[in-house]
Image (cartoon, rainbow over all chains, first blue to last red):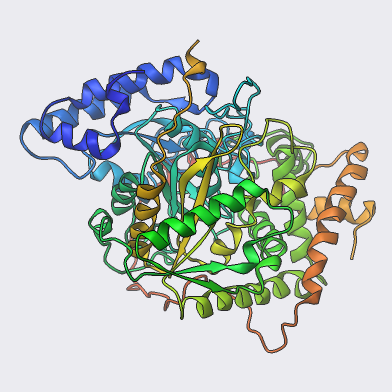
Amino acid sequence: MSELTKLTLAAARDALKKKEISAVELTGAYLAEMAAGTALNTYVTVTAEKSMEMAKASDARLAKGAGGALEGLPLGIKDLFCTKDVLTTASSHILDGFRPPYESTVTANLWRDGAVMLGKLNNDEFAMGSSNETSFYGPVVNPWRRKGSDAKLVPGGSSGGSSAAVAAKLCLAATATDTGGSIRQPAAFTGTVGIKPTYGRCSRWGIVAFASSLDQAGPITRDVRDAAIMLTSMAGHDEKDTTSVDRPVPDYEAALGQGVKGLKVGIPKEYRVDGMPAEIDALWSRGIEWLKAAGAEIKEVSLPHTKYALPTYYIVAPAECSSNLARYDGVRYGLRVEGRDITDMYEKTRAAGFGAEVRRRVLMGTYVLSAGYYDAYYLKAQKVRTLIARDFAAAFADVDVLLTPTAPSAAFGIGEKTDDPLSMYLNDVFTVPVNLAGLPGISVPAGLSSDGLPLGLQLIGRTFDEETLLRAAYAVEQAADFKAAPEAWWKA
Amino acid sequence: MSVDQRTVRHIARLARIAVRDDELEALERELNGILDWVEQLGEVDVTGVEPMTSAVEVAMKMREDVAVVQDLQQEVTRNAPGAEDGFYVVPKVVE
C-alpha cells in the first residue's frame, strides 16, 4: 500500500500545508489504489481526469499559501449526491445516464473548501438496504474477511461503497447519508468512523431523496478527528433546503481532546435486546469502563418505546419513499421503457427501473398511505414517533450522551440475509430510533469479534450538540486504540 | 390487516409499477410479513399524542416573495429520454 494513502485526512492536510507532499501526488496515489482495488466494487464512476484537474488547481492555491480547509484532499462521493455534469445514479437502473445540471449543496461546500473528487461511490439502490446488496451495480465487498476465511462479506449499507473505500484506503474520506443507520452501521462493519449529524445540520438539497424527514448527510472517515474536519465543511444553512437549520457551524475539530471528565453518559437498558451476541455485550461493557476510567459518570436510562422504533420506521420510511420516488416516470430523466400509452409507459419503466427492495418499499408505502389505511398506519406511526422522541428528551434531561452498540452483529456474508427482508431490517435496531428523533449519532470502531471482524460502539447526542458527541467519541477512540486493518487481499 | 393478491395488484396500479401475475404470490407473502410485524404498534396507547411532523423543532423560514427569472429550459430537459425544442415528449395523452 502506498505510503501516501496511509496518511489520515488531518495528516495529509498538514503535510500539504507544509508542502511535504503535493495534491497531484496524493490524488495520483489514490487513483492507483482505486485501479488496483476494483475487486471491491466500491466506485460506480471514477472521475480521474477531473480529479487531476482539481488537484492541480489545489497545488496552485497551496503554492501561494492560500487554500481552504480541505485543500487538495481527495474524497469519494456517495452516488446519492448530485454532482454537476457527472453521472449520478443512486445505484438505480432508473437513473441511467443522469447527469445533473447542478451540484448538491454538501458537495459544493467540499469543493468550496478545496477538496478533490475521486469519483462516485456505490450504495444500496436509493439508499434502501443495510448491506449494499440492492445496488444495480452489484454488491460492494467488505475489505475485511473473517480469520482464516476468504468468504466475501458485506460492507454494511446503504453507504457500503463509502465505508469499504475508506477502510481499503481508496479515498481519504467519503460522504455518506443516513436514513435509518446507513452511515453508522457500515462504519461499524468496516472499522471506520461514521457520524450522522442532527437532522437539519447538513443541507439535503441535491441529495437524491429517500425519506425526507429522516435523511441526513454525514462523513465516513478513518478516525474521529477526520470526521470532525469533514463535518465542519459539509454542515451549514442553505436557503434551498427549508429544513436546514440557520445556526453557526462550530469548529468541530476544536471540540476534540477536551476530555469527558464529569460528562454524564446514559446507558439505555432497552438496548440490551434478546439474542444479542455475548461479544457485542462485552464490547459495550468495555466502552462503559473506558468512559468511566476517563472520568465520565455512568447512569442507566430508560427509553421505553425502543422496541417500536423499527416497525414505526418501516411505515414512515416507505411512505415517504413512495412519495419521493413518484418522480421516476420515464419522462424527465433516466430510463424509459416505451408502452402502448402513457400509463403503460410509466408502469413498464418503473417495473424495469426499480430493484426488488425498492419496489417492495414503494408498494408498502403506497399501501399505508392509501385511502382507508392512512390513519391506521401512517398517522399512528407518526404518533409513536413522538413518543420515541419524548423518551430521548427525558433521558437527555439527566445525561449528556448515550452509549450503545452500533449494530447487533459484525459484518455478515454476501447473500446471507437477502431472502428475508425482516432479518435484514433488524440490523438497524440501534440506529433507527436516532433518525426518528432527529438526533446526532456516531459510530466508533471499538474492537474485533472472535473471528477478527471490526465492531463499533455508537454514541448518541442532544440535538445540535455534535461537539459533545465528538468529544465523547474521541475519548472512546483513544481508549479503544483500534489499530487493526484488513490485509490488502483485493490487490492480488 | 393483511393484503390479498387483488389488493397487491391495486397497490401496484396506484404506484404505477407493472407486476406480472407470477410475481403476485411472492409480493403478497412479503408485504403480509411486514404488515404482520408492524401490527405490534397496535399495543401502543397514543391517546392525546400529536403526530410528529418535524424531526427538529424549528420555525419554518420565510423568504421574500420576489420573482426570479431564470432561463433553464434547456438544462431542465437535457436529461429527458424524449425532448424536443425544450419540451418533454410523451405518448399521446388526449385523444
